[in-house]
Length: 329
Ligand SMILES: [Fe+2]
Ligand SMILES: [Fe+2]
Image (cartoon, rainbow, N blue to C red):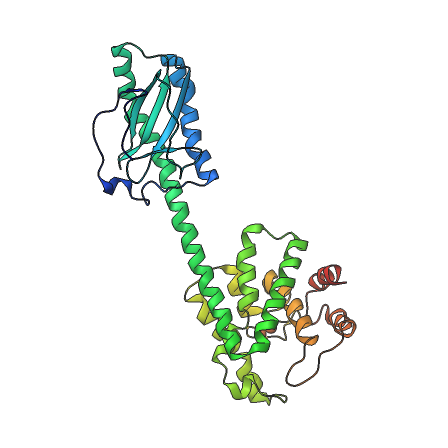
């Protein structure tokens, strides 16, 4: 956009920034409402000071767009087309990285000495935006990493589904019920994503189990059962190479531990078993019992619930069975 000089007094040093200063990764436009508020809070912090010092009746910020155009702070993707007031004065606002935008002030600081004084403050004002911009930029990088991380998880779930369709539908159901239980128990929200990942990927280690065992229609021999039990350690090895989410790994490694110590792989008992694994074990077994499997038909829910009650304090944490019954019945 061509710069107009018709409707305001321009205090800008005629320094046209090159395109490299307008890279979106430096000034991440357009800004979300939340990001915008964080930018405005900086201006708000200065506003009282500048009003006191120079007697401005109004002050506002226009951001510099990718091609040097002025962008409305409230609609950051929209170039400004409305005419500005003739009484406004414009000052460029720069950070160490480049031009951030322009401050528009009305009234106050009329004398050249006062304008010089204000101009000397501009780098300070610009610098106070830098921390916010950096946080916005890092926040976006973080969001993009989280999205990629989640993408890897989703791909692994689909990969497991290609091996075994039954496992995929079981996985989706148990992750849904697990999250209901997590809400019911009031577990910290910051653990929710990791728990969901653990539920979705609890059987990912089955990728390492031969078809002859994984898809066997009849019951397993003791040796085949031991082979199948390895899926928890396989899963742990697969996932721990790219995630450190504690709850995810706890579910994957320990979802077959038993409250009385008769589970696997580590024969943990009672509260030695991570809470999320104790919680998930109840959901996992209930769903397995109420689903058709190659080696048996699905149990009715009432029978499966009776089994959970009988196994409270043996296979399962009694408190987790109680919570499950509160959610499921
Ligand atoms: Fe499993
Ligand atoms: Fe399972």
